[in-house]
Image 1 (tube, one colour):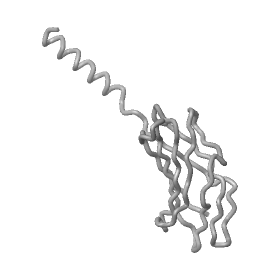
Image 2 (tube, rainbow, N blue to C red):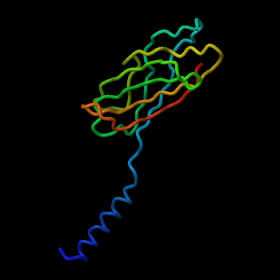
Image 3 (cartoon, one colour):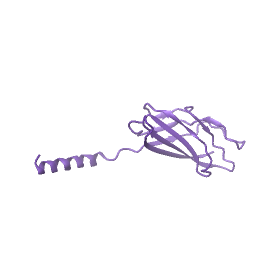
Image 4 (spheres, rainbow, N blue to C red):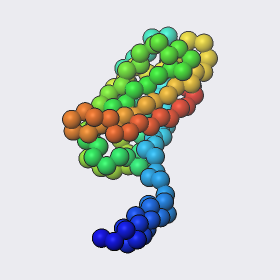
Length: 133
């Protein structure tokens, strides 16, 4: 191939990629749903909230969820891993975790969803925060 033709083809490919724009980022959102307010100071294991997913990375076979109390990050609320075969939601009840039970007023909680391929390789990560109660 002549140098000028090769240069033109490379330039055309670069322009094409830049016009396509960046891929949308993996994201999640959730609602606490009907989660009853904890009054005992002792979190119980409860069903996960329903999650809405957007732009899940191609090749995702599983999604690992983990919840963290931003006000008390050392407390382990746990989470769970679910099989993923497409779609834009993870239903409530797909796994259990320790419910939020802040002892001194509302706390901010963060869910992290990690998209994994069939071998466990991380493909992407999404986070969502919400106050409780």
